[in-house]
Length: 120
Image (cartoon, rainbow, N blue to C red; front, top):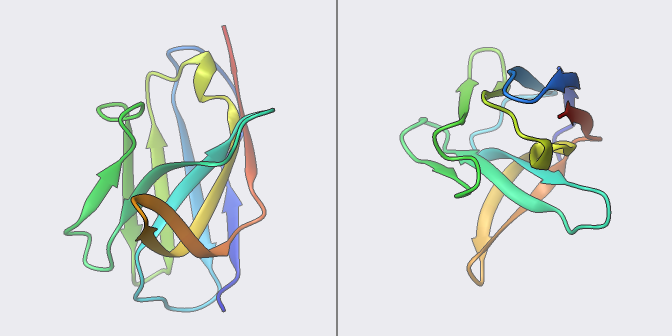
């Protein structure tokens, strides 16, 4: 199991930008990603990236606005969020060993989450 620690959350105005980072406790060759959970809603997939970075997937709601990247030398994965909307407000979770099950993204390792608040 890998320990994941997120950072970079905070308060931002709508149409602003924020960058989330996640540090893994050890090297992981699995796909990593980001999920989010808004109040009263289920956790949802945001983005994932393969070990090589050659396979990247985004939720439709964030395509063109969010960019996921990873630095395997530093065991980190980041999420650059631009043009933020109030509906992006949620707790964002870093994840490792991301996989697809019955058409849905899941993960085996989770961080504690970081709050992103978007003011309108």
